[in-house]
Length: 78
Image (tube, rainbow, N blue to C red; front, side, top):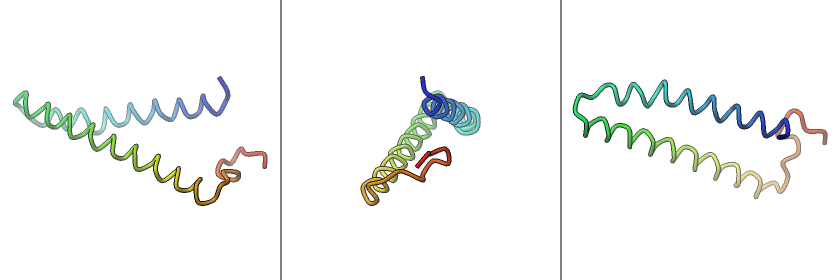
């Protein structure tokens, strides 16, 4: 595994832990009935999915517009 893959994996894991602990658990815990908890969990995961899709589309739009990703990462050699 390269350093870049390791850094992206660590960032994804930290982001997932932050989402679960700061958004999903309080959203589910704030309701009393099981169907309310399921609804809150579903909506939280739905919003997470939308944010991931928006981020991927923004990244693809940047690459499509510039045809270049050099200089995006501070550790790039170019």
